[in-house]
Structures are given as C-alpha cells and as structure tokens.
Length: 342
Image 1 (cartoon, rainbow, N blue to C red):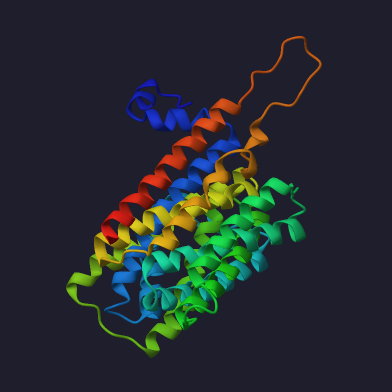
Image 2 (image 1 turned 135 degrees about the vertical axis):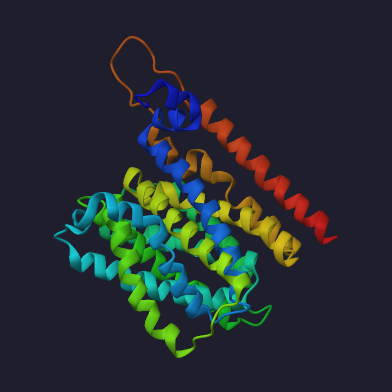
C-alpha cells in the first residue's frame, strides 16, 4: 500500500492494485495493456491511410522517447546497465519486424478483423512457453487457448473467402510478437521493466528510420497529434505489459489478450464505421468466456491444501464473479455490434 495516506485516498485504485496477489496484478495490467494497444491500433489504422506504414512505425518509436525521457533524466546511463545485450538486440529485431508487418497489415485490413487475427499470439506464446520456459500446462489451459485460436480461424474462413496479404502479415506479426514476449520473460528474470523498455525504444528508432526514409512523406499538421498519441500510448502499453509478464506466467496472461476484440470492435465502429459481421462477433465473443475461470490458470492464486484444522475459504465465487462480469461485457458488446450492423 502507498506509504502516504493522502496518496492512498487520492489514488484508491492504486491502493487496491497493490493489495492484490502478484498474479492478479499481472492480469489487471494485461487488461489495461489491451485497452492501450487497442487505442494505439485505432490511431495506426487512421494514420496509415495518410502516411506510409513504415513511417508511422518510425514516429511511434521516436515519440516513445517522450515517455522514457524523464526516466533517462532521473536514472541516467544506469538504465542501460546490463549483461544481456544480445537478448535486448534479439527482442528489438523481433519487435521491429513484428511492428512493420502489423502496421502494413493493419493498413490493409479492418481494425476488428486485424485484432481478431492477433489472437493467434496466445497459442504461439503458450507453445513457446512450454518449449523454452518449462511452464506447466494443464488441459484446461490448452482448451482455453485453442478456443481462442478457433475463433481466429473463423475470422479467416479458409476456403470461404480470399486470404488477403494484410491478414497474412498480421499472422506473421503475431508469431513474432509471441517470440518477443518469451524474450521479455527471460529478460525479466534479471532486468528491470524500465531497462527492458528503454533498450527496445532506443534500438527501434534507427531500425525503423532506415526503411522510413525510403518512402518519406512529410506529415500534415493534423497528423502530428495522431503520431504523438501512437508513440506515447504504445510505450506506456509496453511498460504495462512488460511488468505484467514479470508478475505472472505467460499462459495465465495471454488469454486476457482477447479483450482487445471488444475494444477494437467499439473503436472500429466509432472511428471507421467498420462493423464486424455477425458470425465473427458471435464466435469470437464466446471464445474468451472460459478464460477467466478455471481454464485460464488464474486459479494459481488458490491457496494450497494444508493440514491445519481450519478449512481454507473457497475462492471459486470470486473467480466466478469475474467470469460472469466478463461474460456480460462480451455478450453486451456482441449484441450492440449486431444491433448496429442491422
């Protein structure tokens, strides 16, 4: 809890957050990160209609310095102290290729469709976590992950419609992003969240500048607000997700990534009048439902059985309450989108 009672009263949510179990903190941060990234994706979708996607990617990293500049002033070069430069470089390479693929793909694909296709990332991440990190897997986690993967396949509908290049680029981006998350998890064992974020932000600027110069177009005055927003919210989202990854297993966190579809559906309707079709919303709207209950692995917060005479309270009602709230949110979102589509 905050040491200053006045601060605790002014920021009640911060006090509640600090009182949570670390795994619950990671889940909360992951949910916040999905909202931040959905907002960034909306701004990217708009900006790439007026500027080359690789140039937007460069400005996303350049204006990310706005967030980390105060940290550089405060901590100086100590933020760059590391013995794992190779892993930082690998993360930057994975990040830049994933970013460019996603930016180009998003410029060619509707927002909700592109967001839905990114839901293959949990499957890739879960597989890599089992192979390289040795994380424990149970059948309920696999069921939840594959339910989301099936939902993404519904979006693609192979054999029923043309498989466009934008969708393929988004899928490639998801695979590379999953690999970057594994890299972050490994780095998080010895590196601070600030060091990981500072390294990737600084390294991505020259990596994206080179291709941006080849297709450079000077942004208009109205575009600067969007570009600054993309850089700031994207870097804040990276900080949030990096901290979440340090607090909880990847297989616990990634199912919450499905909430991006809810945010993307609303934002796509508001800004671009892109209404997802009924089948997409109904199938993907149901995919996240088991992810906040037993199948998600959030139950790791459940106290272990002990030999003490006093039984441990059953935490199931609280997890069930979360599941019901998410179920209500997703179903309400789906019904609203279907109503707007009609």
